[in-house]
Image: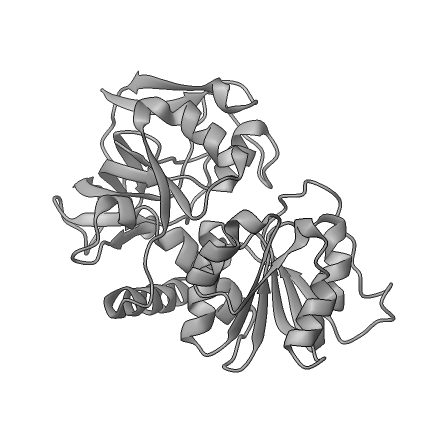
Amino acid sequence: MARTVLFSELGGPGVMRVQDVEVRDPGPGEVRIRVEAFGLNRAEALFRSGLYIEPVKRFPATLGTEAAGVVEAVGAGVTGLRPGEPVSTVQTFSMNDYGVYGERMIVPATAVLRRPEGLGAVEGSAVWMAYVTAYGALMEAGGMRPGDTVVLNAASSSVGLAALRVADRLGATPIALTRTAAKKEALLKEGAAEVIVTGEGEDVVERVLAATGGRGAELVLDAVAGPGVRDLARAVADDGTLLVYGALSGQPTPYPGIELGMPALAMRTYTMLETTTRPERLRRAAAFVNSGLRSGAFRAVVDRTFELAEIVEAHRYLESNAQVGKIVVTV
């Protein structure tokens, strides 16, 4: 038996329960991991509440995609992984099929990455989702180049912080958006060239145009979506891209190009699965992130840790939006 987080109805953090669950052997193409820590992501709160891009298909349901631990067993056909090996997981799967919130969890082998030497479990559960998402959005989907300017909202999230470092490492200029001044110094410390505090009346378009000599940003990475894309689109350079990778606003998202007189604006969506479910892209992403970790250019930013029994409190903190970086649950 293993303690596992399950929920049997949609709702707030209180619907989650830690229950003892029978642990099965991994099937073909699967790996069983003894989980030491797992990172929380906004998608899990949305899935739990019924607001995610994919609905919950059955109850009781599991949660989680990003964990670190040790390989306990491998199923038929799995090569390159052995029991006792420290690993991390990335999302290549649906939470309707697998989850990592628990002591001993099964995931597809395609989701398992070797954990670099010296990277602990807490850091190993806080680095891959953020950096692979940032890498895929900025480089694979966004085509970011040295000298570009990148605008990031929800910049204090783990993905936002990773994107600041990815942009800086590639010679681009990152501009961070945040709603409150409380996070401004932290964002500057993490590598933002400028921080625009949107909740205090600072004009995003005016500030971005001033910072870029009037041309606008080549890439805008939007985790919020909703009506705010109208202003973000006005800050995009000619032939630039507005890339939407989240929907935190929960509101309908218009296409602003028509309203702006049909400029050369590319607007598209992105999810990390574009990178993780394509082996060649995942191979490139893993090489890029490992290189950054070895050099010290990349690191996990962990805001706070909770224990497994505190999973409800951990999700409440996630939904408070008070964090700067990743929230991690230790097992």
